[in-house]
Length: 244
Image 1 (cartoon, rainbow, N blue to C red):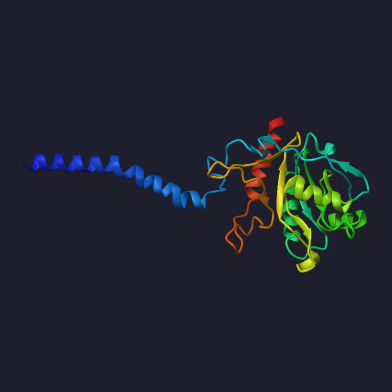
Image 2: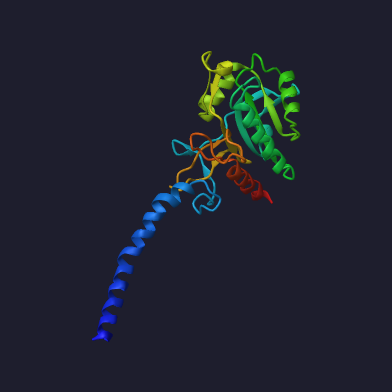
């Protein structure tokens, strides 16, 4: 009788394994693992090819622009063709998120110093105050060395049109907020042909933009938002290595 009892128990264990273990594994994947690993470098979904950001089914290209840089030289979107670059909207007198954004961009600049085809476009949303001279001093204060990092100023309406309609990155004057301007602390990643790119999240959707307000040393802010500079660095390198 013992022999048959062991066989019966083994059969029950086998059935349990077939029916329930896959469900337990899936449940774990769909909760804590996916939630905590959404932007991780170990996330296989996030490490797939980078997405093209699409509007009405068409890959989104950076609109035409032409502004003065910190050396009073006209820089256009065509100057960035052939380069991988980041676009941001900021202002030099910003008392809140801009200093952290600039620190993160300098961090990326220094990590990518061996890649000559990396650049940054920093558009001021306070062009009345941010003259080329002020932008140059700001660049010097942050030890900007990348020759393809341009701090850009010009017509206010054109800059706001580029931010809000061109990139869909919110920017506006608001006298009720610190500094008098409000804006999203996002970085847009643009490829060598001028297309806006991003990685996918764990659900297979493009994240669109990368948060620039949390430093790599912080990992997470007070709202529980994860830093994305680490994965942004990886994604920049993915695009740069296309031409290697």
